[in-house]
Length: 250
Ligand code: ADP
Ligand code: MG
Image (tube, protein in one colour):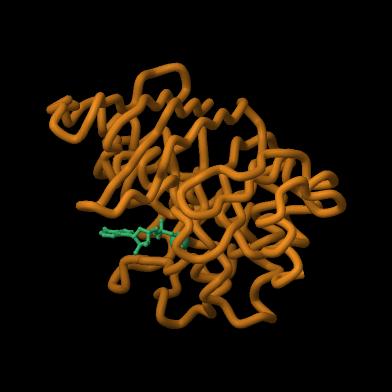
């Protein structure tokens, strides 16, 4: 589903990703952990063209999603290609970014209607079933401001799913939530994982990583330092930096 080869990404003179090689298979759930500033968000953002890579190659679902030799290499992608990529890749951020003046249902229907120009009745039907999946059938006509953070994040997940993505990227989806609201969001993500969704999840929720992930990746200072099973990384981390990090957070 994702293949990254020799990915580098710099912001000016700051090299943030330093030769990343990474694959994610269809149906796999991969958690990315690591200290703040290690490049986790940038890595996710490169996958769906929110950032351009400086060099390397990325494939998403078998298609070349980005490639560059260096930052002077003017590889252009058409709007159509980027459009296609973005509808295949759903993303959920730490902040929910819902449309404040639209109801829950309208938030979910927006992209399929406007971007995909889908039929309104069918879009409404599938939006309602997504709200059932995330447990919010009683909030269909509510406005985001009247929902808790956990409920808003579940709407954000439903909204991303409305485009029927092949792959979901989560960037610390529970970090902005009060502790008592974290569980309800993780539950929805767990359900998605069980349904076979391919997921790449940046998280500090080690319990979730242990329970749900097929693989856990530890990033530090722009490198993938360790890429292994949850059992291995949590019981027997090979790398000293992984061990130090886990000692701090566990
Ligand atoms: P993480 O998500 O692991 O905390 P990020 O990918 O957000 O790390 O950031 C990695 C590094 O890249 C940090 O030093 C950050 O300040 C820098 N960075 C991220 N985005 C930008 C940007 N748009 N411009 C300049 N520097 C950036
Ligand atoms: Mg981040």
